[in-house]
Length: 177
Image (cartoon, one colour):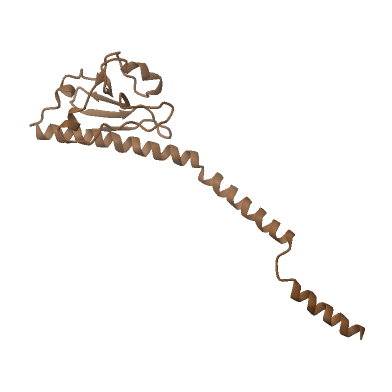
């Protein structure tokens, strides 16, 4: 009889043991947490965000330069009057104002050389070459439509350089043609 009761007890215990124990659940949760931490450290989201902001800056520089060059081609090789009058080798902030453009040199890798070294490229919008003048994504400084965070230079060989003031994971972001 004792043997029969023991068999019945074992059968009943198996019927009630359908879930996981608390220890088993805690071990699985700990393993998942460790794997999640390893993935986050490996991906470094801050680095990925900085890379994406740099990619936007590079695309904006190319977009501005393409609009300038399209305008030049459509006008028989002549630059916009604002670009044509730039001093050779001078660095200018692309801005919607005429003063204060060198006030932001602490955030620019290529320094603007004078208080009034500003250039307004809104004619590119008016003539339909670009929808809007791009503004650099927020990095160390919050750029705006007055001071875009991009500079322009026309060198002695008549090559136009567009540079981003900031770059986070590269030495300098520049497009030139």
